[in-house]
Length: 158
Picture 1 (cartoon, rainbow, N blue to C red):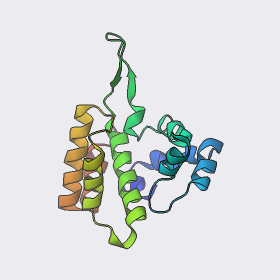
Picture 2 (picture 1 turned 90 degrees about the horizontal axis):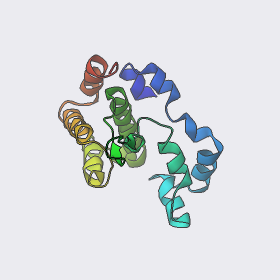
Picture 3 (picture 1 turned 135 degrees about the vertical axis):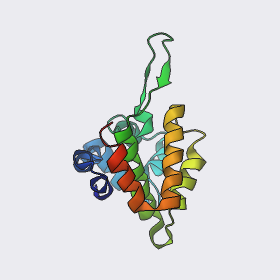
Picture 4 (picture 1 turned 120 degrees about the horizontal axis):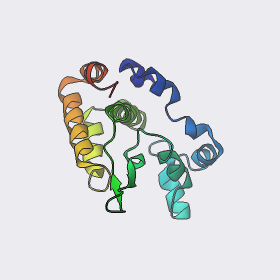
């Protein structure tokens, strides 16, 4: 919420991750809490899948996994271009999560490195991937304040 506000994404900041307070996500998160990484990993180890993650990604537009749909010409699921305002919220989410999980050891490069590590299997449109890479590089080169200023000026209404 804090970072969304800095980007001028007030409504998104207030509504960010509200699904976590529902039954499916809340109790799973409490049961599988780890502290240094997502509880979804432990739920997957236990059950072979994470019901909380499937619930979460289907209700929160700042997750790239949300942006798939059936192409009416090919009749196959394909990646859809994620609107800028949700890319911005996703970046805020990634920065916050990296700070929480890395605590005092946090460096901005951790956000970019984690994205680069998961990019091979993260489902997203190529144009969305390119924008994430561009923005993460900008963040590492120019800092948080400059990134949020850029987002506020260029991305929140798209």
